[in-house]
Image (tube, rainbow, N blue to C red):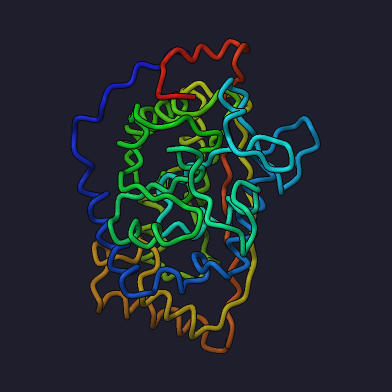
Length: 329
């Protein structure tokens, strides 16, 4: 496959601007990282990182969740080494505040352990890059140790030629914000930006959360209207040229106090709950629905289903046809 990518000429869609505005508001109020899904200390983030690494690790070499793929390009030996192996480069596209970016990078061994020096670059190139369109998110990500932050939206970033090749590209809870018509361009751009032998990991949720998920009915309906089917994303990954494409569904079950969960809903922790969809009055009606539903419960059991979609780029010499120079490798 050859890469022929032009710069994105049209502006980001209005839906993206609305989503960005929503998350800026949530982050500024402190509600984003206090939500269990995005709290750096939560077991949820560590679990997601471990599942990501389990699914993206190479089948050869006995890799463990503490290891991750390394570039097979000629330039890989210029990357700082860890335990005698070249250290991978990671880009988290739509990485928000960079908290999960750091959790994944530490779990993968890309960044050193707690208490080590703040190693962000090798030469002029970042080892770990967090990309997000929201200025408030990017500002917070810049304070995360080991993470370099860049303000850009996913589609625009995927078309850039001025970046170092990366070995791992992550899109966590991002693709449902893009129109289906943009998915081919997004994944084709990421394919071109990855090192030969690199991997893309998309983390998203099912099209239908199910009636058991503790959100009110109108919210679950909005979710269905905006969340694509996993097969749509998988098809786009395959069309981009990725191989060994696999989709895995995993469930993380946890308990949270009813008060905490209802506070999360009131804080509009997901864009599904944004003012674009619900006024304050409508949101409170939804909360009252949940209060009636869980009237006899002090805790709420959340069974969160995540979809991990992984695709690999063939190593050099394997017929990958990667002919475009996106920057020094």
